[in-house]
Image (tube, rainbow, N blue to C red):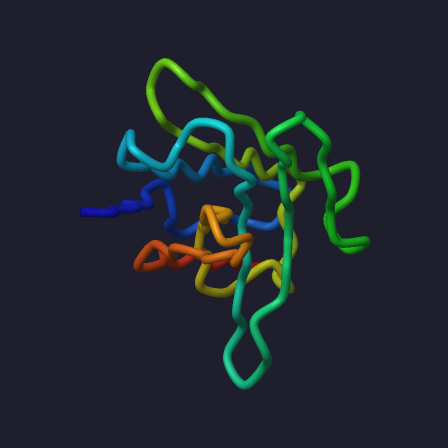
Length: 120
């Protein structure tokens, strides 16, 4: 059974930091791309950060230089370090893992989300 379990969200002050973690069931962690999306109230879900199996990272322009995505293969965990937080970073954050099936079809698995609230 595929499971992604996020943690690390909470309340932070503007300028502060949080670190999100997403533990992924071992069967799909290795060799797959993963990342984080967020969804603010009344807005569409947007990509925040992504990490390919080759180690290439991608960030939304709004978080470049402030957020860092990384993975710990020994712990089957993907992290998102968030520094210099801003109120506009508030939202529900979701991790995902993208698996390429034998047929070439790409399937994304999602966590349940963790809430981040940044106050002024």
